[in-house]
Picture 1 (cartoon, rainbow, N blue to C red):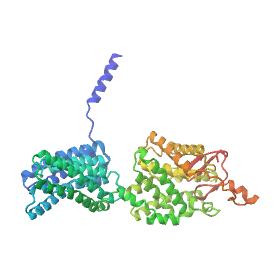
Picture 2: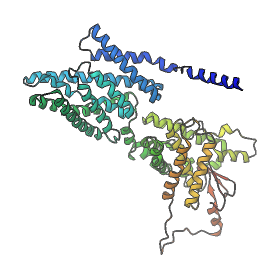
Picture 3: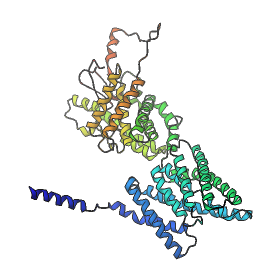
Picture 4: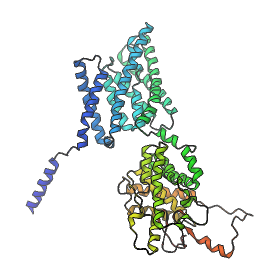
Amino acid sequence: MKEKKNGKRIELKESLQKKPEVPKIYIKKLPLVLLFGLLTSVAVSKALTLQYIAGGFIISGILFLIFYRDIIRYKPDYLKNYRMLLLLGILLIFTVSTGKLFQYFFQKFTIGLGTVPFGTAIYGMPIAAGAILITLIFDFHTAIIFSFTVSLLTGLWAETPLYPVYAFVGSLVGAFSVMRCKKRSDILRAGLYVSAANMLTLTGILLFRGPFNSGYASTAFMYAIVSGIMVSAVVSLILPAIETVFKVTTDITLLELLDLNHPLMKNLMITAPGTYHHSIIVGTLVEAVAEDIGVNPLLARVSAYYHDIGKMKMPEYFVENQTGAVSRHERITPHMSSIILASHVKDGVEIAREYDLPEPVIEILQQHHGTRLMTYFYEKAKDRGDGEPHEEDYRYHGPKPQSRVAALVMLADAVEAASRVLKDPTPGRIESMVDKIINHIFIDGQLEECELTLRDISMIKKKFTYILTGILHRRIDYPGFDFGEKTDKKTAGKEDRTKGLHGDTHKKSTTKDTYREGKILTGTKKDR
C-alpha cells in the first residue's frame, strides 16, 4: 500500500513539474507582434537612426509582448481571428502616429503665434481616440491594457515625464464613456468627458511640477480642451471606415439594424406578416434574458429580428403566414416539405449577404435551427407506410449553435412557436411548455457546442415564462359584445383541429406528441 501511495505521489509531483505546452497558434503570431513593435518604434522615434529605432524596438517590443500575453490569458478568441488581431495592431500604430501628427501640427501653430509657450502642444494630442475605438470594436478590458501600452509609448517622444499619466487618464475616461454607446452622438459626449478629464489631470501635473505659470497654463488648458474635440472628430471619421473595411460589428451598427423601417424589415412585414410578428416576439424574449446570461442584448435582438428572413422566398409554406383553409403541404410529400423548411435557412443567408448584414448575425441565422429534427414531417413520412424514412433527411443542416447568443435565439424561436399551440395559456401551462421545449432541445444535443451553462438555462426558462405570461395574458369579456363566430354543427367540429408545421393539419392532440416546426410539445386534451 505504501508503494502505491508513493507511486501516486511521484506521478503527481511529475505532472505538476511538467510545463504546460504553448499552443502553436500563439507561437505563430509572435512574428506579427514583433513586426508591430518594429513599426511602432519607427513611428515614435525622434529621428530615423539605427540607435533610436533599436531602442524604441526593444521598449515597444516588450510592451507588445505584455499586451499579447494579456490577450492570450483573457481574450484568446481574438487570436483565432487573424483579421481582428491585425486590426488591433494597426489601431495601436495609428494612435501613436496620429498623436505625433497632431503634435507636429500644434507645434507649428504655436510657433506661428509667436508668444505662446512651445511645450504645450503635446496636450492637444488625441491619444484617447485609440482607447475609444478599442472599446467600441473589442471590449473594455482590451481598452485598459491598450491605454496602458499607448500611454507608455508616448513617453518615448513626449518631453514631459508626467505626460503618460495625462494620456492614460484621458484614455481610460474615454473608454468608460463609450461602454454604453447607443448612438453616434454619444461619441461627441465622450469627447467632452475626455476634455474634462484632461483639464483635471493637467491641473494636477502643473501643480506638481512647481510654480504655476499662468501663461503656460492657459495655453495648456486650451490644448487639453481641443484634445477632447479632436478625439470625437477622429473616432467619428475612422469608425465607419473600420466597420466597412474590416467587417466589424459595433453596437452602433446593431442599433441601426433595429430600425423597423429598415428595407429588409419592411419587406418582411409586407411579404410574411406572421413571420414578422413572430420575429418581434422572439426579439423581446432574447433581449429580456441576454444581460442575465452575459451576452450582448443588441446582438441577440437584431439576430432574432432577422433570423427567419429566408421565409420571404416562400411565405405561404409557413403556417404563421397562411390564410387559407388548406395547407400547401397537403399537396406534396413530407420529404419535399422538409426540403422547403430547411431551405429557409439557406435562403436567409443569401438575403442577409445581399443586404450586407453583419457576419455575427449571419452566423446566428445559420445556426438558429441547429441540426434539429423536423419531427412532424418525419412522423408523417413514417405513417405513409413507404418504408422507414432516413432521419437525416428530416433534419436541418446546421451547424449547431456555436455561441450563447445563437443558442438563446434557438430556444426563444422554439418556445414562441410552441406558445401559439396552447389553447388555454395559463401561467402553469406556459411554464410547463417552456420547460418541455428547452429540455427537449438540450437532450437532443443542440447546445453541446456552445458555452451555455445549466445556470443560464434555468435563468432563460424563468424569463421566458415571465415574458410569455405577460404576452399571452387574458382579457375580460366586453359586456354587450359577442365576438364569437357563428358556425353550424358541421363546421363546429373543425375548431378542435390544430395546424401542424407550416400548414400541415393533423387531428386533435391526445396524449401523443404534437409537433410544430420541428419543436416537440407533449400535452393532453386537458392541457390543450
